[in-house]
Image (cartoon, rainbow, N blue to C red; front, side, top):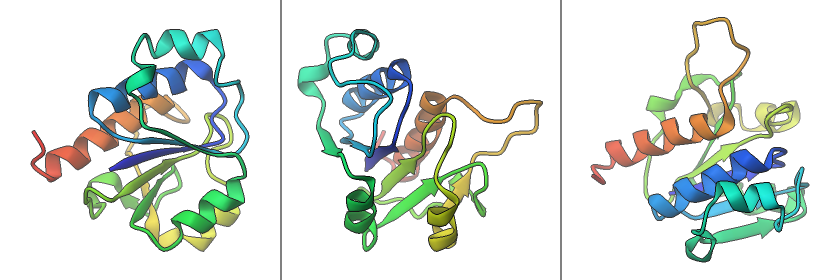
Length: 149
């Protein structure tokens, strides 16, 4: 599987996700404008000393990322998702796409790929889950379904 973050804003979250990706040998894509630089000390600190092991790919222009991913097996995770994340048709080629912490995925993209939108259920009094928590939930569910561990 591959984790893709579209325009992430908070370096701690991305650093934490980098560590998760190293722990699960999962490539990480950063697409579009970032809310930090790749040499940000908070990003590096959250990822600890694992950066050399991370399979990191960068799409500085977000439209180029969406063109690249369009004909691939992908799932967009959004609180406005049509289906539950447990219904994703996981494969080792599945790209799990998550939006920025404050804006999520654009409505235009959600409308275009409505049939590929999924959500993590929430019933408490919060608007959303933390980005790194959301990625961990979905990524481990994918590996569980694939009997990876």
